[in-house]
Image (cartoon, rainbow, N blue to C red; front, side):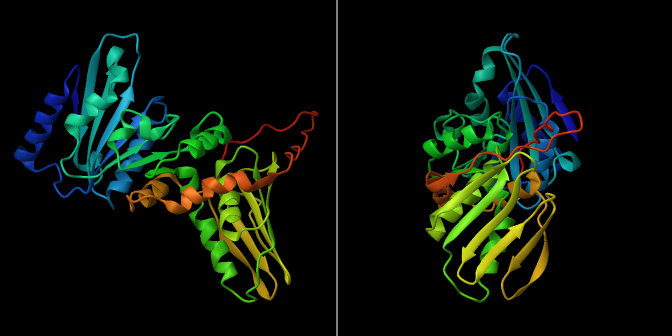
Length: 327
């Protein structure tokens, strides 16, 4: 069920939610948090709502979407309520803010927050420089950004490192879960030797590749070289050096990885890029500070970098265009 409320107020939206609950029980009551999505571009708004709906099936919540419209328009709020099949296991409230109200997202969100429930803020596209100091970010126990969605992912990641506050996290980090799990599992197999050096190769503007290298540098306490390439997408390979030989996890096509290490058979591993839905579900499982992510950010200072490898030339002599950032 989708209910449009043009030129409305937050009080009217609240009354409509209560009316829906009293009239038909359409709004779930067993919600564990409020998820606020701040979407400034609007280009992929429905994709972000779909991801939140899927996440709500594991984490029932109220989803509040702040979509900022033209700042030159007359001041108004266009509201929309989605419940039932159009809202997963949650209720979705979309507020489109225009004119002077476009910068008043916090005032629009506060009246709709669930009482005594944790608050998670998600910026699926461009996020604030300091999420914890953003007016909406100040409301939350958990603040989720995505460096890969920024215009300059590596610069955005550097900003996240400088501005980190407990409760911050980034989907560029969440996309690494499978890589981290495979590498840890490989080191749990004999021979149990100390790693002496590591190399992480990936796309030059991939924040996930940077974070993976930072994580290895922080926890292995060894030199980690970050090799940049312009001829592949996301993370390409991780090589861990030790006395008996190297452990290498190589994913040339962005889908299937190959794990090779001395004394063990070579294994093929599914390493597809994780969907936004899967990453959001994982992040909503915890509301406490992510100390491992914080450590990976600190590890970025310990990396040694190489120059980007030149992309292969096309038949006309021009370089192939760079692909979008991925993990």
